[in-house]
Image: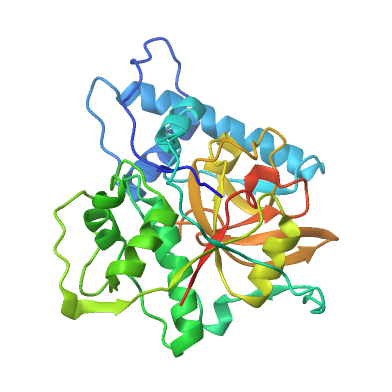
Length: 333
């Protein structure tokens, strides 16, 4: 089975300045507080446009949450670091996707044990498999965070030690296998690179959110893997079996929608989501049910201030919504 090569989440160019927008003076204090909290700075050319976009997102949030209170949605949204981006800009922010394939590699395919009854809920976080939420910043490196996350879990499973692994190492050192640092990459290529070369710890090779030269030291290698196992495509049942019996699983999703950009809490379901056009790499760390609605527990890499302390609960068993079961893998350790 082949996988798409590049998925990323980088920054985009700014749209033309808005010149005819009347700002809501009741939002002045909130605007200043938001800019200060997220350390936003604008030049005179784009400040008014960003304020206009931010206000439009504030109105979108208020309307969505009103509809949520009336039972129309299963999740709430809120202002965050992406509040000055339009929906179209956010698509570009994510869309580093290439149709190029990862090559003719042969992978093991996960086979669920039909004789094992899966638990109703799974969460690997309190069991020590998951490092704290990280922040990729303005860099298209989600693929590296998903890769380290899934390997961190399997290393813990084998050794009992939770080691934060280096995304920067993958960004700087895997260009030889086709990855492009802040401009996107592939979790499968990254894991195959780790199989041959190992990976450094976050402590010895810290994250900078910028592309750099490979500075790997063989003495600092702290983990490796034996190969890559893939979950049967589009099968949420198999993904659930893997999450329940293996540990956190690296998954790809369609995250380009304004509703996802501003997600805050609840079970995220987006009817416009694609299960084919995927543009973001994340980590499924468990699943559960609330009010008879099933969800995946998904770790993102946009910092702990995004979503539900850095996590999103994504709709489960809803026809592979947002493609969460389309491209799921884990390493053999």
